[in-house]
Amino acid sequence: MPAGEKFDRLVAIMARLRAPDGCPWDREQTLETIKPYLLEETYEVLDAIDARDWRGLAEELGDLMLQAVFFARIAGDEGLFTIEESLDAINTKLVRRHPHVFADGDARTADEVKQRWDRIKAEEHREKGGVRERLLDGISRSQPALAEAAQIAGRAAKAGFDWENAEQVIAKLHEELDELAAARASGIASHQAGEIGDLLFVIVNIARFLKVDPEQALRRTNRKFRRRFGYVEEKLDQAGKRLEESSIDEMEALWQEAKRLE
Image (cartoon, rainbow, N blue to C red; front, side):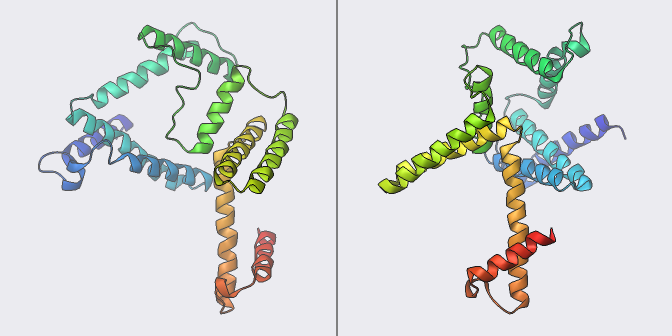
């Protein structure tokens, strides 16, 4: 069965689930109530990619597509728009923003493509009669903070508000560490929280200069910590000991053992 027919079947299944005699749970959902599932499924897609679990990725992408169809079905039921309109919008957008593929435009590098994409996007906004956006207005505030910081810093850099090299950002990191030390000495919690935020923002900029995605880098570190800490816990279990009964030296020795085994 071609992909288009399979997509049509997914749309039909969701319509059946939302029908008056369909699934009670699916019928009572709203655009607000299913938002958490969209985020959850997105992270499961990322997990599958990081784990190089390609069969799992195929399944997770199906779950992600379901979320898009679910949102569109609810919107259709509420008379807001249809899934056909969503598909028309993305098809039109992709063709219009790739004139070097579908028209007589010319773009030889990925950077040129991105610049043209941004320029066409701005033109579309003007044609719609929209109020002029500030540079950072289009960046979502509801995404993970590290990802938001990376986008904010990237856009500001494109406007020329940036350091010249990674060394300057690393020097800024040391400056922020000194400011954090001063905030700790003050004992004022709000000052400490502010300096921690500044420190994280500088680290995001270091990642940008090194062309590292900070969100994905932290996710990899989280997985590494889970793996090594799990090893520590397993070894202590085998020795008949609980975590809270073990010394930091014992746990550190097992942590280093787990590190060597990787």
